[in-house]
Image 1 (tube, protein in one colour):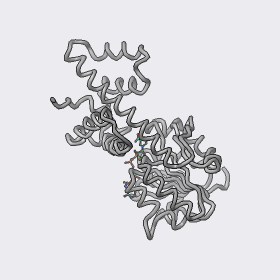
Image 2 (cartoon, rainbow, N blue to C red):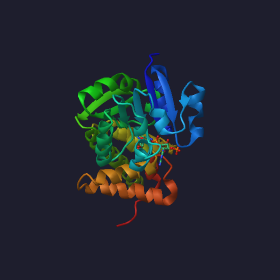
Image 3 (cartoon, rainbow, N blue to C red):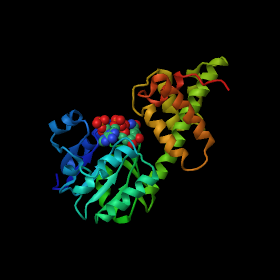
Image 4 (cartoon, rainbow, N blue to C red):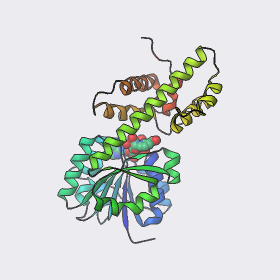
Length: 287
Ligand SMILES: NC(=O)c1ccc[n+]([C@@H]2O[C@H](COP(=O)([O-])OP(=O)(O)OC[C@H]3O[C@@H](n4cnc5c(N)ncnc54)[C@H](OP(=O)(O)O)[C@@H]3O)[C@@H](O)[C@H]2O)c1
């Protein structure tokens, strides 16, 4: 263990797993809005902080992994408790949440005004990858920020893909990745339902599709979960809807918008907390 002081903000499904991996990398201070969720990490050696501001004080690196723009604004920018108020000059801030490019750019400005560096580092992969340190980190920021973050990113992920020199570039790229992924999952769900209606067994169709280059590994994995009826939350529908709304704002994407409508429908039918593969259980609306 080094004497690096890491503050980790946001201990949800992803954040708790990522923070756990960092315990061996230094002294880890954790903050979560709901304190109870921090207990397992505190039991494993992390120190609890009552506010993001307190967590960031003295930190060399502050990492956030929360829901969306609003949550990230709360942990970083709150005028009395935000992490920026505690962030030491020269520290490194890393925003891993899936947020809009506009928020990431605003955060970058605020962090730089404190004399610190921001790396945008949203991740691809879900809870199993977070637990195993097999995420793909989609990075954006200066070479200096990236170089400082690299040892920690290598603990969280198996690949670091650099989207560009600005933190907002990482946010854009993450939304492209999720637009591609979620659209494929929605298409797979609809195709499997259509196959069954047309008299082909979905299991047989999946077995054949997975032997063909048109089927991505992610779509094949999603199809496997659909066949198994396993929709335990990994990447829940509510987060998919949020990401696709953010993605739609990047520019016209009618196909992504159609996929978004499928997930919004699933959420409206009460499946918001289920894995995105649950869209297979939701019949597409006519017309
Ligand atoms: N799940 C996935 O497969 C996956 C994969 C890649 C990326 N992501 C992205 O990773 C981020 C986290 O996802 P997750 O699955 O870990 O979500 P999650 O389990 O729902 O956790 C959300 C976290 O955000 C915190 N939060 C929400 N609103 C807040 C607010 N207003 N102020 C302060 N904290 C707030 C929650 O605190 P409480 O505990 O108090 O509610 C919790 O720590 C999201 O941006 C998501 O899009 C998720």
